[in-house]
Image 1 (cartoon, rainbow, N blue to C red):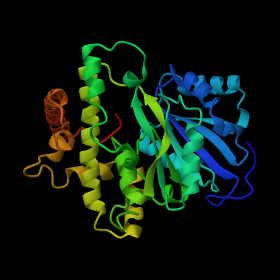
Image 2 (cartoon, one colour; image 1 turned 180 degrees about the vertical axis):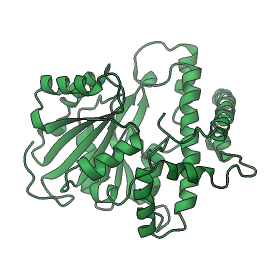
Image 3 (cartoon, helix red, strand yellow; image 1 turned 135 degrees about the horizontal axis):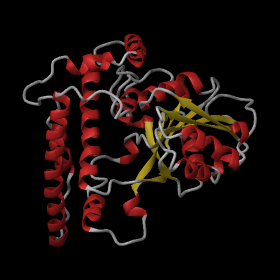
Image 4 (cartoon, helix red, strand yellow; image 1 turned 90 degrees about the vertical axis):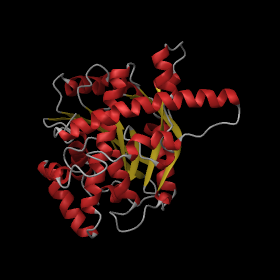
Length: 353
């Protein structure tokens, strides 16, 4: 690591800041720091790389454990640990982008504290993909469930959870909040509303539409030739809770987009600066016009999204398997949809989960 002499995207050295978002991750943050020490990006002379561990709203001593791990790994000033009193990923995202990241950064990387990086080139690939194509604004890593990565026999519930993954989105067109990168100038063009249940879909919309000034442009985003491993839910109860948060996040985002969409970019920036400081902004947006017919609090397409995306193979065996998975998925999605409707109706959609 070294001082940067050039700050333009695509020139060398490329100044890069990485944020590790950690909420009550004391049990696993040491492993995350150790894994970071194995990333090849640390050895690249053309990349000026810095890491910020952002422990937010923690009650388990995450920051202290992280600081000890940083010292043990010998990172020195190249890794900073911040202990933020207020929790919430969108709030912490804003602090990183607008307060903590270096002004001359070309690329900002965003990483959860509970993922694994088996590919030691992962961060390097993200940075080089983004800096090597000036049209790109966002780069994402391919998410892989640990159930699909481990070498052991899965039980029935685990097999069902594993089989149901990866059916909703084309990963290289969807920002995965667990690990992705943005051009710094693009990230700094907006704030995230405080209290967002799911931030990655909101980020994606802002980036791909240039704050709703144009139609969604998929040439602004791509996936790097790398992957990360995340811990999958192991129980149906855990899976339902997780999926409920995702569906609520999508519903909340839809409400926010409806409020922001008609505005010009400057007005959107003003609204989002206000929303970043005042959680009641998002609560008011969600309450405005809800419930609506026939959706209720959550748009109906969340109920049938997985089923609509299902494709059936030509073989009989493949069709039977796909139909079984689709039925199981529809049952799960119905439970999640009802749970999301109830939580939204109780005013529990906005806030830190």
